[in-house]
Image 1 (cartoon, one colour):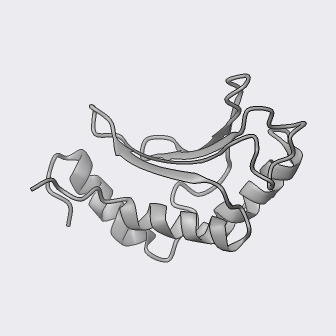
Image 2 (tube, rainbow, N blue to C red; image 1 turned 90 degrees about the horizontal axis):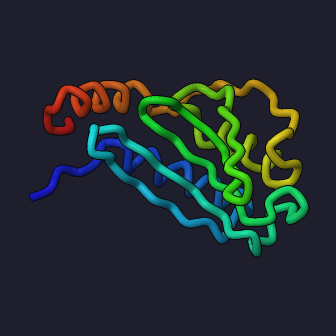
Length: 137
């Protein structure tokens, strides 16, 4: 039986918050790379009504990596921006940043939001176990 990826609950909480805030038409991907880095990505197509099409001609991707934290990128240009969020930011903090990015683009004036997810401590521990090659807690 395959081990459950430790960040699935975090990904689901983020996606639920984005959807509840009206950032619909996104897809959610949760993965592990060959080197055990964990990722999640929320992607909106250019046709998503929440996106400013002048800013996001080919859509927007908001993604998280266990190694780098939160980033947003533009599939049309390959331009990316590291977000100054806590690595395990609360879904509400991520949603606040995503709304500004969706409407204003990569150059959006983002507040430095850093509230942590309510289950961040448990996920930190699970991520450490994952990186060490142990089964998730």
